[in-house]
Length: 306
Image (cartoon, rainbow, N blue to C red; front, side, top):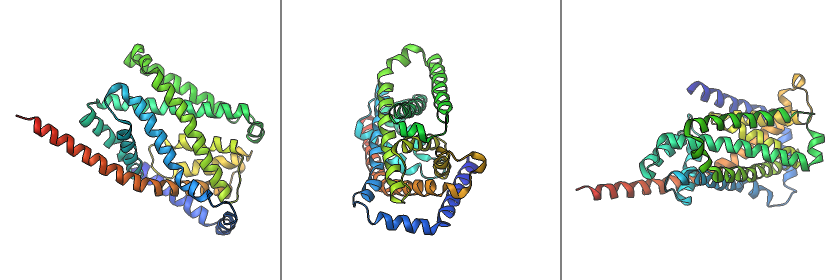
């Protein structure tokens, strides 16, 4: 796992070096941004807060059948994990598992299963968002290579179906069916979340003077979210976005060069910087709230002892 984190850091450094190698393009994009509406920069910086809110709602819906977890409590847990997961080995998830066991009385295995269900429902939500966009957006159908998305979408749906079957066999189909509505809600929320990610990329591409169609940004948002599921905090997502951007415009894989990835790399680094700006205050406040909450719970337990 440590090797994977080192690889991720190396990929992030390589992305930054590649982008800095195109300083003239960066300066041109900055000058172009200076002539645009003043709301674009605040929107790029603050939109990650909407992703945090939706992710908190998804996990709150999925955890409710298993224990008493308040919506603001879940928001604090996701907020603190958001910051901690930027560190190697993603310690935020481990902390959330420990909190649910200590405070909410939810078993570790249950929290792990909910995390898997959240990932599966999120993947299905991304595919639904892509499918709707493909059906409604002729520009997207004309832009992407023929058949480029269909195998990926089928693969994601099949993987989710297989995983759901395994969970049904392991936990019992009645137990899985009992949580059907929260899962449906999680899928719908992930569709909304995908559009927020797409809007972030749309504005960021516009900011660096490499405008992309909104439908293309939907696809890039899907690629970004799927890459974000890989347990490497940094680096992989940047290159996934960087390389997918020219591929979506028909650049053959055999002729793809690193320089072609610069617009996508720059855009995702910009989005990553916005996430850090939001995650630091949200994470610190959330951690302080959780620390006080655990202190009160510890004091209550000690007061109950004879």
